[in-house]
Structure formats: structure tokens, C-alpha cells
Image 1 (cartoon, helix red, strand yellow):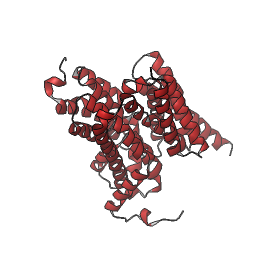
Image 2 (cartoon, rainbow over the protein chains, first blue to last red; image 1 turned 90 degrees about the horizontal axis):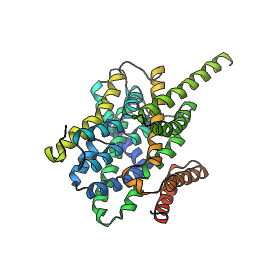
Image 3 (cartoon, rainbow over the protein chains, first blue to last red; image 1 turned 30 degrees about the vertical axis):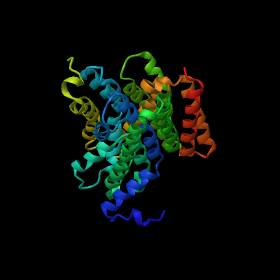
Image 4 (cartoon, rainbow over the protein chains, first blue to last red; image 1 turned 120 degrees about the vertical axis):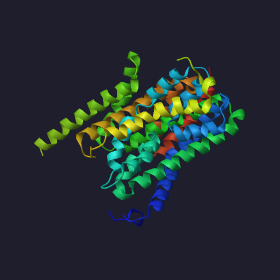
Length: 248
Length: 115
């Protein structure tokens, strides 16, 4: 593979950041977030929040499920209940950030440079980042990921603003269908990105284990789904690797 | 323990019960991974766990929708996701075609089978 101008290790950080934003624009998630946040913006309007609050919640929380919980429960539930529901919905960020960071780190890099990429990590940014980062030189990865994240957050903010202004005219059922963009994009892009047996197996098993765990009503569904399905996939991957080494 | 948003205002509520309980997981991910490199077995396992959790999120969104999505019948949600996936495969794994097809299907289904 030849090295194009955009892969040059000495490319200015600003240009790499812009490359990241272009990648965001070219990602299906840009349009998915736009549609999804039209739905969330309409929801926020319906529950009496201001557009400024909605934008702030996207900048600070940057997690669609947590934001939907906030919007729909803050008005009625106690703060402790809301905090609990939000934190249970966000456990996924721990393994996501943990899997991402080693890809971003470089010799002599500062830990605080990783704070922005950490905060920008959401399903969309992570999925696209894990796909696009390996092709980038290590020196560029943080700036590229930041550009990607900021680009996708902008889609969400634009979408929620549209949702706010359409809300009064948007039938609730239509607004609800817009929230369906996220599971669709998750399904398709994960299927596309699953190039290794480990990724494909972890995802497929998660689809099966998730509903089974949920049916047990033991709580912490996502955490158990991740640990059980992820570990089975990992063990299968290890066994296969070991076999491949024994019988070349 | 019984405080609500009315007691502290929407912005402080957003920071205390929205931002902080959400961000703590990202921060834990960053802290726990110190010293581990990309090729270590722990990271490969963590990545599998993260991927399985994404699938869990997907299953949750489609099967056990809460809030606004729950107004769309379960059969419509599953059918639309299935149709989108078939379109994705037919269109040589085009995410765009799959998402647009699935979204169109869920919209038509939601209106056709509205409760």
C-alpha cells in the first residue's frame, strides 16, 4: 500500500483534525445521528427543556440512551433514580475506552491528550475510529479521532436543533421512528466491520446472550452480556489460535 | 434522597445526574488501561467485551424499547431491522442502503400497524 499525502507522518495536526471531520461527514453515522437527534430534540421540546440545555446535554453527556433517559425522567423521578438509570446505561464506555486508548497512545504522548478522545467516545465515534485509525500513522491518531468525534457531535447538535423547531409539527409516531436510526446503523456497520472471527463472534453472541440475560431480570444486563458473550468469543478465538499454531 | 430537578434546576441536574454518572465509565476505561498495550491479551479480551456490549445495546433497542420507540409494535421493529439487513446484504454490504431501507420499513410499518 502506498502512502498518500494524508498519511504523511508530518502532516499538521490541524489538517489531520480536518481529515477526521471529513471522515465524519463521509460516515453513515453522520446522517444517522442527524436523524436520531431530530427525534431526541423533539422529545426534549415535548418535555419542556430549552434548546440550550439540549445542546449542553449533547456536549457533556454525548450518549443517546443516557440523554433519552435524562429527558424523559428528570421531570418526574428523583435525582438519585435518574443518576442510577444513567450510569447503568453507560457501562459500555469502560471497555470501549479501554480498547481504544492503546490504539491512540504513542511514545512520549501525554495522558491529558487522551482526555478529549476519551470524552468524545460514543458508539458511533468508536465504531468508525476502530475502523479508520489502524490506517493512520500513530502520531496522527489523536487529532484524527478528535476531528471525527467533533464532526459527529456536530451532526447530533444540528439534528437536535432541527428536531426542536420541527417538534410542534412532528407527529409523535414519526419522531419515534427517527430513534430507530441508531439500532439500524449499529447492526449494519458492525456487520461490515466484523472482519475477524473474534469481532463477528462477539457481536453475534451478544445478540443472542443480550435478550437471554435481560429475561433473567438480574439487572446490569449490558455488563453481563458483554462479559459472558465477550469472554466466550475470546476463548474460542484463543483455542483456534492455539490450534493454528500446533497444526500449521 | 428525594430531591428532584425542581430543587436544583435543569443545568445542575444535567451535570450531577447526567454528566458525572455517565463520564465515570469513560474515565475508568482510561485509568484501568494504563500500561497495557494494543496487542496484550487483556486488550483483545476487552475489545471482545465492548463489541458484545454493542450487540447488547442493539438487542435492547430493538426488543425491549422503552419510551418513544415502544410506541412502535415489536413485530414492526424486528421486521424492519431484518429487512434493512437483507437490503444491506443485497447491496453488497452497503450500510447506507441498509439503514435507509430499515428506516423506511419502520416508518411504513409504524403507520400501518399503529396501535
